[in-house]
Amino acid sequence: MAKISAMIQQADLLKKKDPQKALGLVNEVLRADSRHPSALGIKTECLINLKRFGEALKCAKRNVQISGNEVSYGLLYLTLTHLGKFSEALEAAERSASLAPGSEISRQQLRRAILQNRLQKMVENGSLETTSINTADALHDSAHKKMCAKKFDEALEDILEACEISGTTERHRQLLQEILRLKEKARKKK
Image (cartoon, rainbow, N blue to C red; front, side):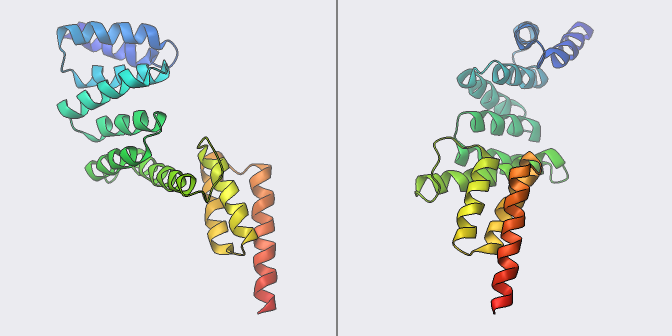
């Protein structure tokens, strides 16, 4: 038991720096206990870091079946996001947040999932021209279009979300100032 705990701790430390080595450790743990939730979670993260998303999805789903906690649903959300399955990712994020309503990570994942799902729908209906969903960039583009259409409050909402996701870049700051300037100008005309 102590050996398994030590292997889990070591794998957890290595999952980002050396995901292949961490994967070897968790696979050894899983040979001893195929239902070990921490090992399944770390294995999912290793597979994501190795960009083996199909395998990560299988592992994440297995972890949800076994533990069904907010962490397992959070990992399922991450995997589905990498696969571009935003509506399924939203469901996983909602479940994670419902299991741990006080969890800041679960709330952030849910907020991102809602945005990703919204952006995906915008791409599908042609209101956003992009082939890849980079959330902050897509929100910036959406804010610009809304500003041009004089939908200033909606534009502000989008650019503020973009700033929250990627930080206030110079590009975001300039657009934010332009939106505020045009909004004030429109208000004065009334």
